[in-house]
Image (cartoon, rainbow over the protein chains, first blue to last red):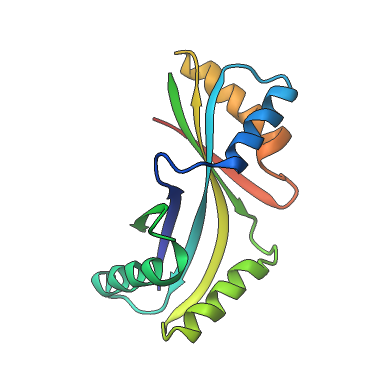
Length: 80
Length: 80
């Protein structure tokens, strides 16, 4: 059993209206000093098997094919 | 300027239909050995100021009030 976390974030320069909305909502709630918020996604994966090298390669392929839109998003993989 | 990352994940036992859909999609793409996927959210915050203790307290309040639904979600805060 291998556990891994994939974090997908928008690339710099890509507009993030969701993040802007959260900034606005925090301001409306009285939180000051928030300069910027950008929202991303996180995927917690549990994989069968014990080969970490193989698992990392598999997860990279999953990111390229499904989990991330590599035109506008970056991803990082961390294995436990 | 303080940078922080908030990670919001579903609590154990809370159904995650989005994660299930991703599991199904990965299976359809030919990826085997995926036991479970759960999706969460990540927020990258940039705050004005230099007081890390104060910033952490502020971010905790933001999580409780807006960023996380603490009935069904856990959150972790990590400051750079």
